Image (cartoon, rainbow, N blue to C red; front, side, top):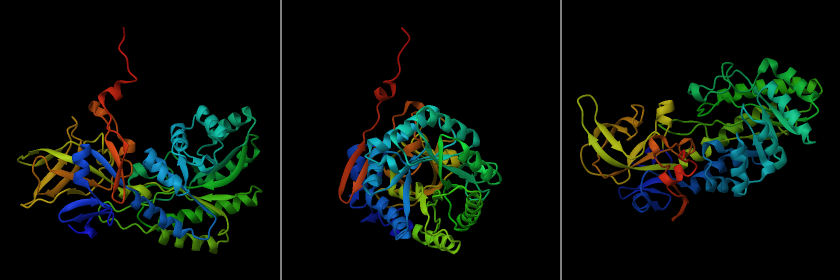
Amino acid sequence: MTHTTLAGAPFVATQNNDLYLESVKLADLAHAHGTPLFVYSKAAMLSALAAYQRGFAGRNARICYAMKANSSLAVLQVFAQAGCGFDIVSGGELDRVIAAGGDVSKVIFSGVGKTRAEMRKALEAGIACFNVESEAELEVLSDVAQSMGKRAPISIRVNPNVDAKTHPYISTGLKGNKFGVAHERALATYQRAASLPGLQVTGIDCHIGSQITESTPYLDAMDRVLDLVQAIEAAGIAIHHIDFGGGLGINYNGDTPPAADALWAQLLAKLDARGYGQRQLMIEPGRSLVGNAGVCLTEVLYLKPGEQKNFCIVDAAMNDLPRPAMYEAFHQIVPVSARAGEAVTYDVVGPVCESGDWLGRDRQLAVQSGDLLAVLSTGAYCMAMSSNYNTRGRAAEILVDGDKAHVIRRRETVADQMACESLVR
């Protein structure tokens, strides 16, 4: 096992057969804090962000972290202190931005089902923009804003019908997806928005999916969006900013997405060629900022040989790491401390009472009960999507900064889970 084989390298690395995150030995964290345990590298997050910052050097651009990927307060604090805005999809996420010290005036509110209460909260807070996803939402948002004596700043999310070539559950830019306004309806929708007294048109938005590993879908989507900008402005409606969403993928299993700065060099060249290079740009990366920054540590409970399958049963489960069960997603699984001996092919599974509770299939591992494993690339859509299924407490979280390790979430107890419940008396 070398640096180049590990997703998350160089921040995830081996030294003398032990796995480290930055300068912290992961086995020490597992022994001190128990398992399952999520551990994040601050340096990995800032390094990923720096690639976007290099790509936008000299441009009027705002990077808004898509916090649905990982909404832990200390993670948000890292990006807030680095000057990022935030892309939110609920009123609760707005509360988290505020609690983490984020700048509310740099918040973009996305999502197909914003409630009136959420709209009011965001308008009171003074967010930057609503990304509106339907014609019906325009009418409701205008009504809410008018009732408050305000005008809501909006962009309209356009569905360009571009295939992001990703898993169908995380594709968002095709006609069959629930997101955005159809490309063919965009001009008429902008004309309606401009006529509503509670709205102020400020931009246009497009987001085609997640875990995108090719440049071509972005380039295709940009062409379609810029065609619309031209048509909308020809109709007398000014577009002040262009929002190209996020969705850039990471390396889970030898994936080779373009680097953020290389991708944006291509996109900005196209933007310049079409005469829009001086517009304000907004993007909303999520997974690409945090995905490879995280690992999940788990203990091997039992080894269970079988006629057709050998099972390595660990204490992390689908409630901790839902991506394999939801998407059949791949995560590298490696020993925290390498052990001599012949590797055996195992399905790595959790203790939840579901056949879908698996973390990895057909993995070659030399392990014994009591050993620790690290599930890599778990910084995005793992803790944020975790649950209490089977009355399992959510894991603790640690943020590593060099040789320091900070507890940023304590392990959840059963008492925590039942605190909002009561018996009928």
